[in-house]
Amino acid sequence: MGKTREIKKRIKAVGNIKRITRTMQMIATSKFAKALLRATATKPYTEGIFGLVTELAQTAGNLEHPLIDGPDGGFKDGAKELTLLITSDRGLCGPYNGSVLRTATAHFRNEPDAKAGRIDLVGKKGEAFLKFSGIPVTETYSFGDTPSFAQIERLADAYMDLFIAGEITAVRVIYMRFISAGKQTPEVLSLLPLKPPAVSEDNAKTGPTLQYEFSPNGPELLAELLPSTVKASLFQAFNDAIVSEHVARMIAMKAATDNAGSMGKDLTRVYNRARQAQITTELTEIISGAAALE
Image 1 (cartoon, rainbow, N blue to C red):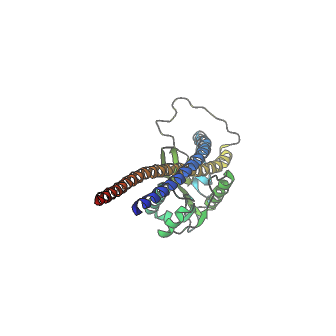
Image 2: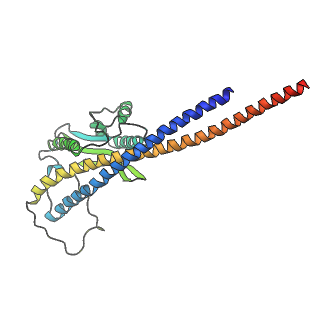
Image 3: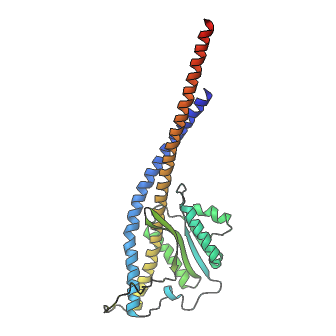
């Protein structure tokens, strides 16, 4: 009797866990849908502004700007790289944080200057890992599930000011890049110095090219476009990281719900067998007692 009672308690506990994980899966699915709209809505602008900068540089010739070439007076003594690591505030999102942190570890191993430089952290889940690894964190940020462009703009402005002043030599962003609902890859984004994507020979335009007349001139256009490109790229990285976190949590909670359902079926089968054996034993005892009275 004690065995069946214990199995019954386990069946109830597994059922409660299944209800919780199913609810968390539904919440993650809802948040994923909203985050996906944000990420896909900003991506065309980010790609478009990169295309404008690339086309401007190709058409107007070699253009110089501090965000591309660094400060005019060079970097200050002791200036180091800055690395921004984007993790999540909450757990239960499968391999999301582990993949980002492994990429960061490999980056710090291959780039000693990055490990010795300034490290900024977004999210609470990377804090314990970096502390255990002996990597000091200079600044910690928390923007929640829906960071506004104004928040990311202030962060980008601060980084650009430090870079133009020569206090940091580069800015790298380690985050989870969202490709599709079935594929997300950790990536190290070189935010500063800004290097627009080079055009390969295969993708290069052949034949006559369009000639543009710039008004205002190239340097003035770059002064407007390059800061906007940095801000848009950083905002896109945050949007990709958030939508990747939600899809990872959605998948993890679905797997947990399925596992709880399978465990509940297995426990129910064990309970039925134990109950059947108990009934058989009781019937045997009754028949044996009746036979003893004859």
